[in-house]
Image (cartoon, rainbow, N blue to C red; front, side):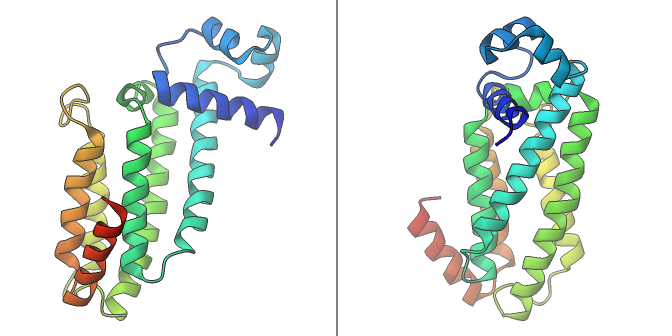
Length: 202
């Protein structure tokens, strides 16, 4: 891990715990235990800092997701692993972080683009294989289902729809996706989904 990656990792953990706006640049420099000159060399401004942290986070997520999906035995497990990972990630994040990131349009857009492009592609590939192998219903419209999954995520992170101080986002995530996945499974896929629920305490 490079020096910059170490700093980005520390910033990411700080943002997940406290949000972005809880700390001024001076606070961040103190918590990172680096010189102000070093901070300025690494980041052009606060927007650049948030953007770099966001890109680093997404790269890590993509890498971890690739490794995780290699352990799945079938498409149902793959979808369940993605959902389980999503629930875990949301539980680890202070809801303020998601709200704060929306104050940084470029970083927020990069994050939304990643979700749109990567997740839509991954979900479409998994669903297609699942249909071919008999785990998901053949009458589902793959393009529509992947679009619905994506739009449900955007709805979930919209603080107007689900204010973080009123709703547990991990529970919202669970309620939206787990029951939806059950609905697109065949009997064969449904049995595997139920097994996964039981064995993984989702």
